[in-house]
Image (tube, rainbow, N blue to C red; front, side, top):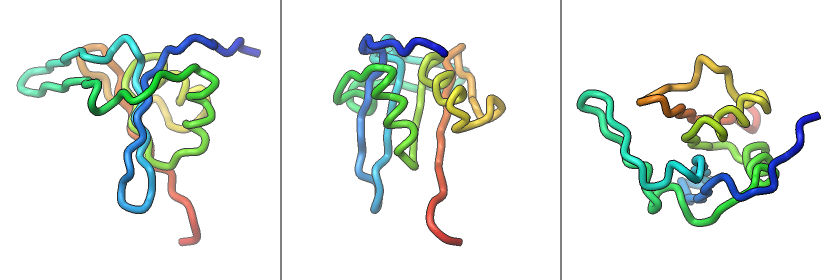
Length: 109
């Protein structure tokens, strides 16, 4: 069994979206970084991704309990993949930084 990292490695921000909550999590070391690929620029801003720092254990709880999740960074994306929340082919890589969006359907259809 893998040992859970208790250091604060992730930035978390919860955003009210329609009638649910959208979760943004990124690797803490990416806050403030600019990513460029051709004409495409992404700012991993503190405003969008950071309201608190969380541990891996906290991240696991949030990932398992949330339905709309926006992830940026190798560590958090690998964690989500290890929890079988998405497939590797769903990950977009921009300037060597992994991005993953997860939407879990719930309810009766």
